[in-house]
Image (cartoon, rainbow, N blue to C red):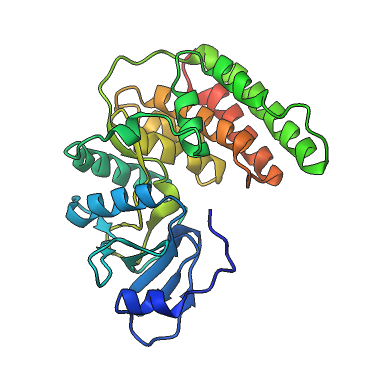
Length: 293
């Protein structure tokens, strides 16, 4: 998550040979970056992940998808003073859940050919997204989540109270989801951990993908996570899980995606308590109608 009030420095524009056009603030799918001409500038809080994404997108070709291409600075780097640049794709996010899920499957097919790095396989204790992902895919997610949520349990103050409320809801949902889980003995590959939030649509053009957030999970997880996120955003219901049941282990991956979002909701410092109700509602719908008993 970016600081939304950060201005675009002039030396960054010059480093990536930006035009003289007036900067235009963009939304969440572009990390609240700045559009200058056909280039989007955004801060890179995790330079290593940003460089990885740039290297993958630079060579990636996906059937029926537009992929935002990284732009190198004058000294051929992808990151300059904490900023990155990418090509702008026309379009806006849309409540077209099934199309995003189908696009995610095409993306996963292309990402099968990308080598898995140790950075994607290993947990990064300093990164809440990595911590949440590994907790959700652990052998005993309920125990892993309980251990994570136990940290800071004695803290006081308004923010601590809000955090405990979020964690209480998340733990309750995890306890209901965990008994439905089956350990999957399948190969992992590079997947995209934020497909719904980074996909844009423009008229009759094919969908566009603004960025790729790497994660090492089974084929189809990009789609499963997009499906659950669409439930949270109320762009679909639990029936989406059944519509894509032809994808192997799809329901199980959606359940893991739900736990991932629950853990992140409990541990991310910028998580908002007002989103708890939608997250809880999506999990309840998934438990009642989207998962086998």
